[in-house]
Image (cartoon, one colour):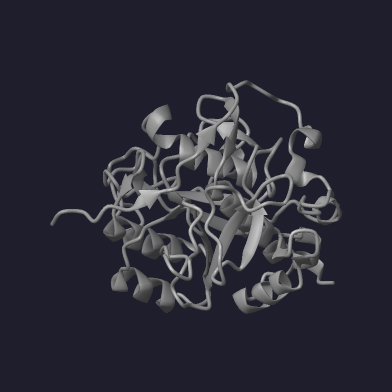
Length: 318
């Protein structure tokens, strides 16, 4: 059967990649407690994440050899590496650190050009210098090569991740194709939260929906992107389906091969929201998606008339 093609969020790199080793919050405008920053410092004084929280990254591959994220990778201790035996009997051979559903192998990183996107998302989540929740764990679920992927592979990745213990999925991509099969799988995992991209074309999602963000499901969080000045990012969707806006422009993040770059995209806003929810769940593991959405609704920003991410309110309420 021919694969149904999804479209991954496209990112625009605006500076030359460079290496970095030292944490510098001033490099990340969105981490500062400014008008449109995410107000995270007080939360960090109490938690930078809990290793019991596993985020499933449904994306392209991840360069897990990077020194700043390698200690946060999920490890399947029920599998013996490289013995070509499915030791845990889950149908995936040597799946030590996740799975490549696109190629049906355990090789979760192929090349810089095809896997920079997933690496960047993992960096925003868990980078020891520049990540939002460096002490959580992430599970690479490679479903894309560059911008190509299939709904069938995404469904397999969700089922695999859920069986591993993932209850928080990062979906920094979108498609215009409605899939009843994908809808039903997400609906069936009501105790899992799916943080999804609210589009990339500055379109009103009420008129031009994207999926899975616009499925009418209680366990989906639809994310839009804003700039440092508080404006809706020029390639973000908007409309009533957006649950929360988060920084999505001039974000400094990890790239493959121990490099860094400034990038733009709703993808980045999704990862920031996922990381914030991971912190909230590190404080209160039982916090529900409904409660999270209620806290988002209390984050109305008078300066831009949008619900914008405030991690302190998310984790501790008003």
